[in-house]
Amino acid sequence: MALDTVLLRELAAAALLFLLTHFFIRSLLSKPSRQLPPGPRGLPLIGALPSLGNMPHVALAKMAKKYGPVMYLKMGTCSMAVASTPDAARAFLKTLDLNFSNRPPNAGATHLAYNREDMVFADYGPRWKLLRKLSNLHMLGGKALDDWSNVRVTELGHMIRTMHDMSSRGEPVVVAEMLCYSMANMIGQVILSRRVFETKGSKSNEFKDMVVELMTTAGYFNIGDFIPSIAWMDLQGIERGMKRLHKKFDDLLSRMIEEHNASAYERKGKPDFLDVVMAHQQSSGDDKLTMPNIKALLLNLFTAGTDTSSSIIEWALAEMLKNPTILKRAHDEMDRVIGRDRRLAESDLPKLPYLQAICKETFRKHPSTPLNLPRIATQACEVNGYYIPKNTRLSVNIWAIGRDPDVWEKPLEFIPERFLDGKLSKIDPRGNDFELIPFGAGRRICAGTRMGIVLVEYILGTLVHSFDWKLANGSGELNMDEAFGLALQKAVSLSAMVTPRLGPTAYTSV
Image 1 (cartoon, rainbow, N blue to C red):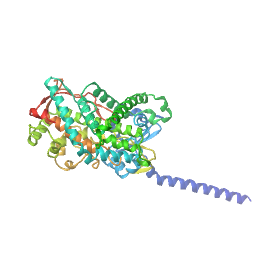
Image 2 (cartoon, rainbow, N blue to C red):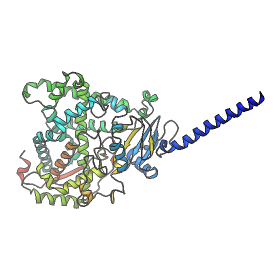
Image 3 (spheres, rainbow, N blue to C red):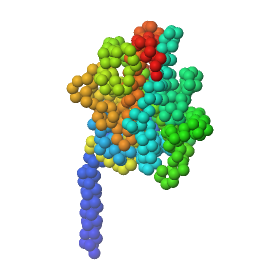
Image 4 (cartoon, one colour):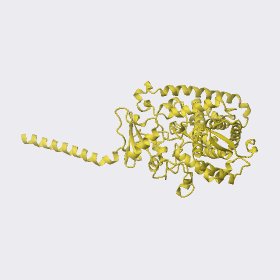
């Protein structure tokens, strides 16, 4: 009996040893595939949130130099992966694109985007595909852009006439205000068949301030997004500001839609974008749109359509004022190709490689979206040998990629010539070359990529060709500081004196 007891004990001990050994060996074997990417330890509960500061894209770029191209951060009770090189971005946005095709929940999507009813924050699915399809077919796609090219010509005519008049009065041009006024009117013509602002003034400036506030507020790292259990406290006051701003935009959009409906008789047989979208209110199934869907989509188009492109143009002009030889070379190219008897036309753009190089260099150094809009992992996956858990948020540091010294020679300098020769001359900013992805990449690439490139090249080219530029303060000092948000603004708006350089008819003809 005693022998049986000893035997049983030995068998039990052997079984326990076998199980422990099996578990230990299995954990050792599986450890490499379950290893998280490197990253800062962070603080209890709040994680790495305080480390991001007021300029998260800069802070994350500095961290990447220490921890590598793929980082893992605890952000409150959430986790976040950050890609900071072209190869890392390609792994997430191309190889694993489908797994990262949704957005995480956040206050901006809830309070500004009508609770994710828009195209930017909506889940990847039928409703998102419909909004994207309608936008491409009737506003943002190649044929649609061609169809409203005359609107761009007309509105640019208004803008350069206004600037010509300001020059004759000795008034400085505040570039951001002028661009917002013009681009809002372009978009208004396509969506509503009318100009949003008849004259530049207090209303257009108020709209610009609202757009900038939206892009800035939506770019904040809101504590409640990362520690949902205390979101109700709104410790930073961000959500209160979002709700106030949403009310302003909702009132504006409601007025636009009411006025549009009242003027329907004027558009017999000539439906505009809003007419097409409103028709889907009467549809059924996946083709049916609600009024929040429609308002949210208009909000996307008016805000992103004005702010992102205008910030790129402002940065490009600032860089040329800082580097007069670049401005002179651009003038020389345009005088040779176009002359000074007429305005630049969109058909001239393919013949202006230096202008296109200036645009690419601005996309690189001053991307309109420094951190891509966040995505979230639908399933656990592996990137570069690291384990990425389910529900991990993804941030691609587009700003850091544009300043990667392994890709770009002298990355902190503004050198358009880098895009004129060699392998960099073939790089295109439309999402296939991960060294230059100012609009993102993959399924959730910015829907307005094509429109953004057209607007930047055409408007910037027209402003450079039509005027000589000098700083308004006459001191030669130019503030190049950034202000972080969804769109990367200049901290101090560019104010400049312009002098006409074309024949008089160029400023009077449409």
